[in-house]
Image 1: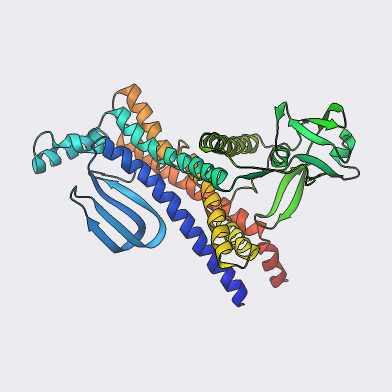
Image 2: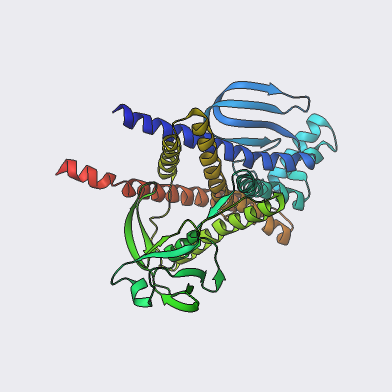
Length: 405
């Protein structure tokens, strides 16, 4: 019982630590660009709920630390509603109040009276900060630790599998997928996972020969130790690398940044591919994860990092590497999610600003309210669906069904 409780506590604590860090960087992006444009800010908060620490600086900005570590927020002066995009009537009312309290011209310090392009940059700065964080983390890891490149050498071909039908043989070296050169076996796995039912072209080296083989991945259900029960594309290949194949590469500053950008781009590209296939019915939705799944994955990775080496110094370094790498991946996800054109998200604000740029006036309060409600319902539905997936992948419903029967 204590072991299970400890695992749960590790999962929750690790998840909250990583989430709060990522959201703080996101909000810091909004804050820094807003201040660069002279926007008046009331509060920058890390965490929610009652303040355990609060200090107001000489600019009148309250820096607050809340007791509930579930992220954070930045509050601009004059925010009138939940969507932070007041209509024309709301702007007129705010201008009258500001002028009455602080005098003519004071409204120019408020976010809502800044030029449209400045407001758009402030809004976009949050997701951009998430992408910059991911690139920075990847670059630091590539410089400080480096990366092991394991070529995609075929170690096993399952009988009767798509790989066997395509003509793969043990010892083949995969050097390209769909015309794109690869340096590591993980690239093969990523492509195959998201290509169920679609032909995948492989370039292989077999001795002195270079061959092209085509295999069609089939969907299989697997029990992943981190993600739980998921359905992914497989062709029946087992990849392995000999000691002579493996290369450890540590990059210089420029190379590390380039690799960080490439890694971030690959995560975004895989996400877009998955969503596109999901929208066309070629992929199941069981790879979506909500807070439960992310917390479990965080806890599993944290536990693995602790068990990898019992020495205190090794535990600290493994934990730091694991959590920072996880933070990079989650930061990309949060940045991507916030750019979706859904009201109440940053992408929804940018959508409203796009309308304002064309119509020369803000979206009416009625349509903003409708959009806000629809966006809230959409996000709530998404979270419920993702949480259902998380519980299903952990076999909770089968467990409960066993209890009932």
